[in-house]
Picture (cartoon, rainbow, N blue to C red):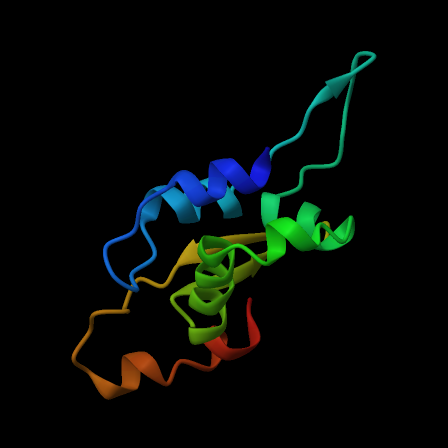
Length: 107
């Protein structure tokens, strides 16, 4: 079912849509027996459970490619959890904005 949802999002060329990025990178938790589960994104969950059919989808691969290219940065919380933020200077014309060391290692 996840594969069908991810594949149903249409993209313009090779560009990752903000909707798809939000869908795959947003962390969700569910309520089971009155307790919240650990928040996970669709990307994390697919990797953790080895969901090869989901990981192999074209749109999922474009999302991972956008992370690797630095379009999204990884932010670490105090308790070790991570979240993804769109890189604010992605369209900047200044070369120094793209050589940000925090972008390379995550903060």
